[in-house]
Length: 115
Image (cartoon, rainbow, N blue to C red; front, side, top):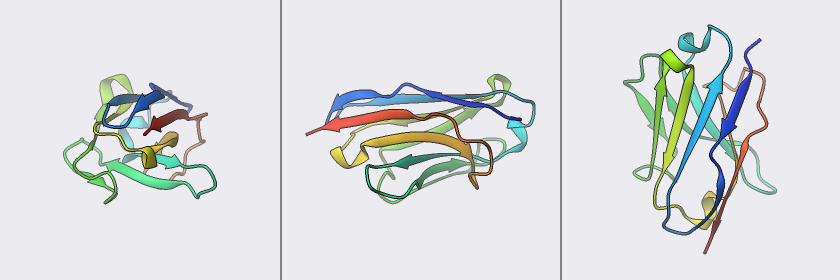
């Protein structure tokens, strides 16, 4: 079973940057399109960014387009999320998973953006 571990969250001010990392156990990582999700307080979990197998195709939610960049390193079983120009509305717990959220969820990493 794949185990996902997210890290890199923290408390920052609006306009600053954070870089999130997610590492996965198991050899099936490279066979999965991967994604980052986030869940804000009182809201449903939402898809933020996704990256296909091979890493050449990425998609983003409109709310983060132009500010966030997703990447992956299959040799390290890792997926990353570079978040720039952060806004208070980016606050939430960030999770990685495959594109459909079908793997076991990790504990997530908290991102808090103050205004």
